[in-house]
Length: 88
Image (cartoon, rainbow, N blue to C red):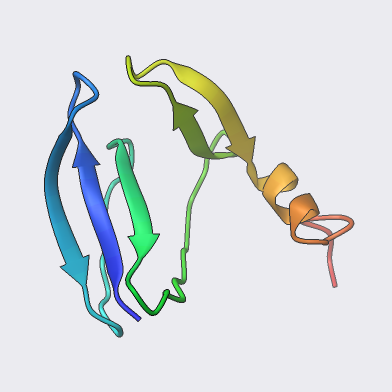
């Protein structure tokens, strides 16, 4: 299904929104606050993320303060991988 992405401005308000149809390839440098969600039929999204410090996602409040940071290890553990990064 389609993916919906909404830019979050520096003041915490919503900016431009765009819809990416199924099969779309997109790339960014990262660091820009945004929200993502699936369309009416949901979405399957593949992320390839380079996280030099291990942080992949941050949860922000309305004032753009970081409430929580998710790391590669935490995300892998939440998905059921016992030892992320270990050789197979």
